[in-house]
Length: 188
Length: 227
Image 1 (tube, rainbow over the protein chains, first blue to last red):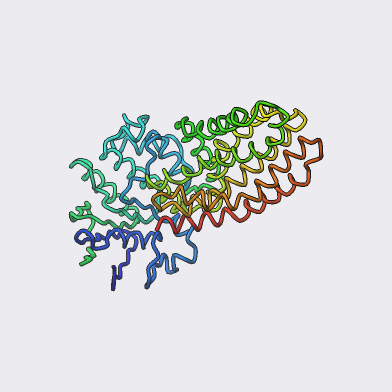
Image 2: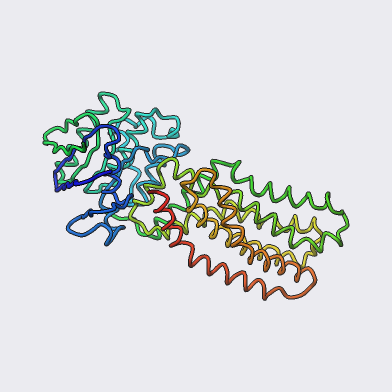
């Protein structure tokens, strides 16, 4: 499906993976995340193949896929406690601050199933933020977000890049990340 | 960054799965209700004579418990797979084998343990003498543990398949047969007043074996199913 693709991202880099439906954007991101094994080629992180220490690599990025990765039965706060808690120790105040920042403060005790699709996307993004990993791999992060949500998320990504993080985004619309140039990788 | 240690992550996963199970009471109650129903059907179908029932009690209790425990296995990873949290678990950077143990332990707590706890009551209704109740509980505790571990491998392997539950039973039940043979034999021996130490020790050895082999197998199967 994918051939002849080479991409790299360093501190402060934002790469936009673009292409029509079915061009392999999600496949590429899943290969980079180590969820799919490429038939040929390799993925390296800090100079080492990701297969050499998969757990250490997984700990250094945060992945947002097509599905939000949320438990519908859990409240927003419980979702973050359990999902992020697997990766790092987390205080209740950090969760509340992030939820408030993403406009989910009033819904923190609502089950995820009763949140709107846009709110669930924001909650999934809260998980990415709280993971505090240097690399963000985001597949269609702006799906279901309103205009204010898109701006808010773009600013969150910009702050992540300011702090020396890197981001790989697969989106249909070119993302406008404040203060940062976005490199484009076209999958024809 | 303050990373969560592997033991703390496994504990968190165990608590998470218990909390989820308690929000689905119907799923938790299903195996134990099935176990009680099937066991009470036998006196109705065969004979209310306790002497006759006593001879079949070991086999009846074990077959019913195995089938009941099998009911809950399908839900072990399916919901996590559907809502994407399994993918996040694979990417958590924690040892998958350890998380698999935590999930298996949570599954046993909500599906296996209730069967063990109600088994004395059902055993008495089948005419099992009170002296043998300890063996009934112990053999079922070991047996449901074996089935949870074996079932976790099956559930992980059949995760991506439609109609996986049928395949799951075909995969798991043949592997559980040795446990069934020794478990039912242990109860029979206890009913006859013999020491059931031998079959119980064999069951314990089987549990140790599957607990050693299952976690890495489940981890690998989950990675394959997520692709």
